[in-house]
Length: 141
Image 1: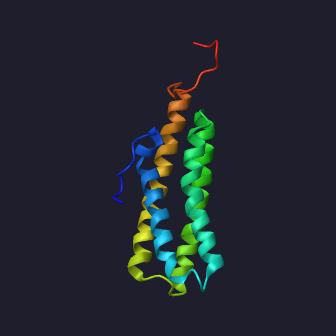
Image 2: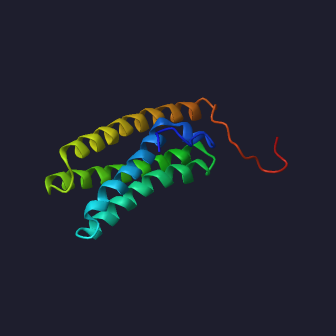
């Protein structure tokens, strides 16, 4: 799948850091197939961290407040950091190639930067009262 292909249904799907997290999840799944039988616990942890990074963004967006969304993005960032440590270990243990290592670390680093910038923007929107809730309680206009 090409990055960006299939995205656009939900607003968060247009966020570059979300698209990166989706690519990271796909790469982790693909790369770890080589050593899933010999390092099954590590593979499970890496796949879980990559999945958690993606799903927390999706879940947080549905909470409908800027503060909740930010909290879930931070949880996602924690999963990304955990995964970055596992990627370091995989390279150190020669389970992944230098090219895979560099690509994953670059993607994780860019995503971390994008997440930090987005959180700053999100806090600014919230403080200025510009975060728009998608759902309103009945009876409220």
